[in-house]
Length: 113
Image 1 (cartoon, helix red, strand yellow):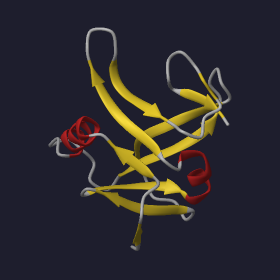
Image 2 (image 1 turned 90 degrees about the vertical axis):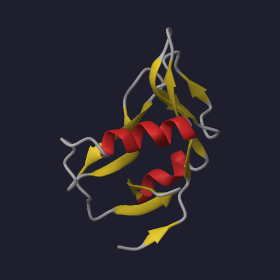
Image 3 (image 1 turned 60 degrees about the horizontal axis):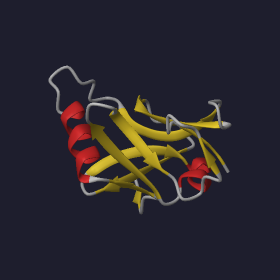
């Protein structure tokens, strides 16, 4: 598999949490971390972050030792995005900071371009 420069950045806390999930004894090592977008959400498009099988249109990326897949066509929407992990009283989970978004929703999981 060829690895190319990633359009996505991870904060140290996001990287730590993703590696923790991937190093869990019950983790299915045949799956790849997938980052992408899909239609829907209150602003038009929603972020995808999960574990999945690699598809033909996917590109393999690596950032600081963290490997993930993304459909090549999603790079247009995700170029320059930063993924963070929040663990606080008011918010817990992954958050997305997207410089390409013209509008985002209050929950931070959907956007418009």
